[in-house]
Length: 289
Ligand SMILES: [Fe+2]
Image (cartoon, rainbow, N blue to C red):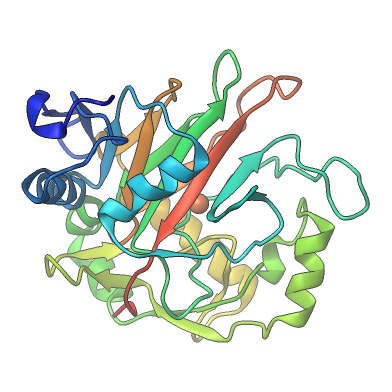
């Protein structure tokens, strides 16, 4: 039987000054009391990302652990769900597409926050490794609240009030994409979801740079190519090494991100003959403003 949470020693320690905290001394399969749940939630929002170490979760237990942080929502890609666990999807380099071929894995990862083409993007995303390559394949994270606050004033004035038009796959970024997803894009309304480029955190009132490089069709008033160049330049100016952290997974790590203040990027720097699979879940969010 698992030990009740109150009998363990929960420890939360910062990974870097600006981003990330590591949590140990908790078994998420055990009942979690309200005070502990709130402590985890606050640590997540304050530190942008939590790494909860030493877990041993089935997909269903991972789904239940995710529910500690809020109501879960469906992944918009319904092709690769964990069997029997509809709110947990799998990210794997061994997925097959609808033709039975190895699904294309993007070669270049883009900085993003998840599901910006939806009206209510997830406030949190959680990842849990099931199979890992010997090295690499980490998830890069950046504190976009710190990045916004450190921007030169002229840049802040320039981007405040800018809006992005989001779609499933930006026309400027449609190479290296699974053909099934491209077919979904043909059915989508291009650039139909308007989002703020600078997002206010609904719980903290802080502002953060907030976009998905691969889903931004354009910034309103700019062409798609110009938009991609502008976003790349913005990241160049805004991101600093001290605001970023690359999480190299160990089995047992539950990583959870506050998407309202973080952007993230997958790592493809690993031996692709080795299996890499993560479970992913999404916690329902509010309308960005
Ligand atoms: Fe993502």
